[in-house]
Image (tube, rainbow, N blue to C red; front, side, top):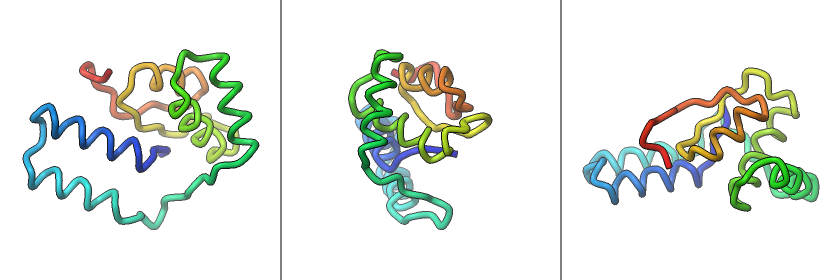
Length: 112
């Protein structure tokens, strides 16, 4: 499964602002993703990642950060995205990830 710390932080912040989380639940959620999981693998910024994000930007109507996130996911999968899980709550990014062959998780009709 591919996701990012930033995606988690933004989702929790949005839910908190919209009243979907109480303080205890928010604190618990943040504690869970603030502690690196043993099976998390960081994809460091690189020239290859930047170039891949540029290619993605030509194929999908995404913001720069979303292009980089999707590029990192593809890079992490070794460009063999078949069946790789991708967690996202943004509709445009979710559609782009699906088009790139990732199995999109956490679908929500309220996602923006």
